[in-house]
Length: 448
Ligand code: XUL
Ligand code: CO
Image (cartoon, rainbow, N blue to C red):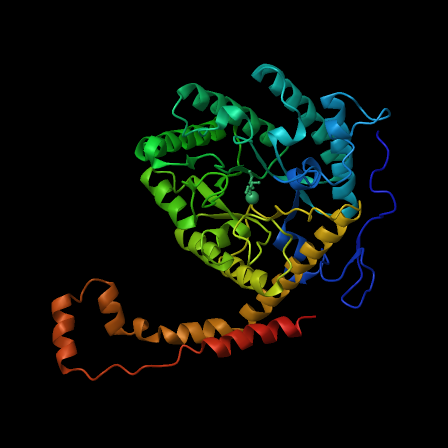
């Protein structure tokens, strides 16, 4: 086995809120019971392969900044010179990281774990070899796979989309890739399978037949569901909404658009959503809004936990640091009944100047502590009844016979007009927003 990469970092342990040890958890205490369930089982935290191990800090203006010796351009005389050797080195570092961090799950794209070969057949052989290796690492470490996904956006063949491509040959290539990646995910015991449509959208309507592309996407998704049943994969199939970037408009714009799409193509019972915080904010919504929308539609699946930047209108994928934002999200998650097969994946990356090896630990420790505090605050809020009592009382009128007569269809516009003729002006009551915001703040302050 390859030698240690994160030298000097030992297993990260829970030391409690008073600890000054920057390489310890202050809030994430995996065995702590919250409403009868362990924190680990509530949060189902995952680290992602792509940002942490495939990205070396490059951006559109500059080269990589981070030491990632498995990158072809960083190969030295004593590191592997071939793509598969580099992929193995990368996987050794990744699993060393998952184990030391004590994070229970990981997530990957097929192209993250193995370099593409010169043909589809060679590429699939390479992926299979790395999936076998990942299986061994999973077995040794106990790390589990939250989800796998096919990268249908990096290769130039997907410039005009994968399922939505004007050329059926590209659709076929994408279908083959997804069949293989779904099977790989299944082999690794993956608990979900994600599709993010990074190129499923358009740059200009001048060359785009939107209706046709949506029909193609509907057909593609049906094929994915059919294949899931064929191979006996029991996890959820998840679409990950994002409004734009890289394309100008993506069809999976937000949770509501995905729900409409699933309904139109008869897939609402088969497919759910993976909600990413930064994608939610890019679509003009709050994170909590997207979660509530998904639960209301019955399509909540999983979460990519990260954060945007209030002044940057692109997908900066920071690690989550706002306990308030995440608490409001976790209130909706707990209210909806929590995760089933989904979890919280840190689809987040370091800042480009964070080039020390242990920066990856600091980033994840901060993210895990933020989610743990948010879980505790959300549970405290819901258990107190402070929000729900006030919410329920706002709708009290709807529980009366009169309110029910409207909802059950007895009342008509006509009958309500007659009633209004003799009625007094309805009494208005306070929405109490500021008081409720203070209530949330109080719960966050008091958690221990
Ligand atoms: C892109 C993004 C992806 C998906 C998986 O913004 O979030 O990494 O999570 O393809
Ligand atoms: Co994501």
